[in-house]
Image (cartoon, rainbow over all chains, first blue to last red; front, top):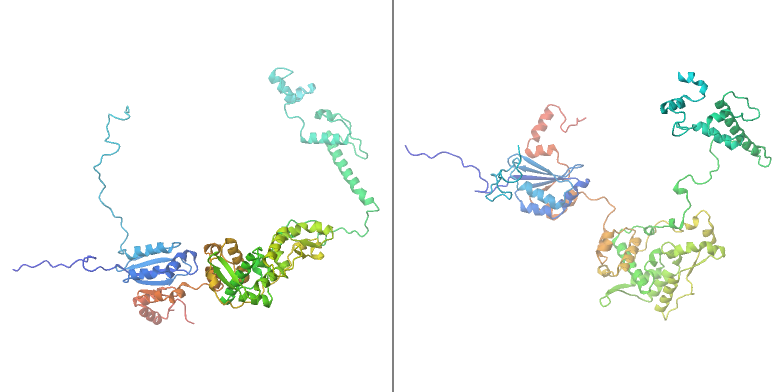
Length: 139
Length: 438
């Protein structure tokens, strides 16, 4: 009996073969009248929007008004999830940072990244506790 | 009680208890530790003292034994309170009746046509009712906004002409050593002055680092005469501190029968310096720089003399001329006083307010020129409209601009299920967009 290999399916590992941007669509909503959209309107009419578009050509950017509402960034990911960020009263540079954050996100839920406990070999400043030093209390 | 048993002693029961507590008939402390006579008793005593019909009692018990007040026609009272109180009231009433009866019985002051008013309608009001708007105007209330002289300039030609005129006027005043704001009162020039204005070229002298003017055919003299001539009265009165001096001098001059106001010495000196600037030319100068105020303007007793004569003039249409060269816009305007005077005059000529950052930001007039030429009256364009005409945005392949709100129907269309939804709604006879079709 010939030796058969184990049948398996290659797992998707983004970044190993071809990198696929997880964000597929970015909605930019603004209001023409609200003062909280001042930064958003400035962002849209500035050179930051073409720069964002050129930096992320894979992402489809949709701009539409949202009358009488605060400005919102809404990112759609290929896993079917959405992430929305309210950008009211933010400056255009801050909105650019939020756009970068959403586009570079993988679309999953926010998780708390836990590492191992921090250990140190350095001695404590206070030293090792000794029952014979310091304030000795009578019980 | 004890009060009945010891009534023969004549002491109040509180005093008896007090003596019993101390065990002595002469206890220490105040003689009357319980406060003395009350308010009504003291008031009664004061009233009696005012009438001078008896001694002021120190104790209420003493008042009890005083004789009754000999008021004629008063019934005799049995008790102290009723007697004194009614005496006081009756005497007050009689005093008031006496005081009222004097003018009524005076034949000289009696007015047969007198009709007592029942309401306040039609009655003469004395004094102010307390509202600030009823106070007569003061010299400080004489104010005319300098922007109210001209209609708003809308075209680039008008704005450029206004800036040119402002620079020429102010620099002419500077060269003539006159106050730079003298030209603020001039509303209209004669055609020859306008021609001189339009033919004057503005150049920048790099040696002295200031703006110089090149006149044609005695244009400088024409403009100086126009500024100092016919319009001097209008130019000085609303804007210069000369007007305040004039108002301060009004009572003294009026007492002397003189209605001619003399300008301060500074202005005379400036006129003399102006005369020195034109040695070969004939400039009228009579020693005093005067303007005349009419007697009617000063004698309005209700404060009308402080009202400005041109306060209610409507904005006039300014005559714009063609400026041959617009290079003066990029020339630096220094010092700051000159720059401010030019901008103020330009603001007046164009009828537009200029924000402070523009006044202090740049040295030249280019930013102000672009600001004045901008369309600020029409409503702002929507962001989508502005984006749809930007070539660097509409040429981006991955940017999609929707000029209206994105609805759930748009999402269904994008996902390709809207046709199915619409067909199903039609088949069931339901409204497609939430509204029934009538």
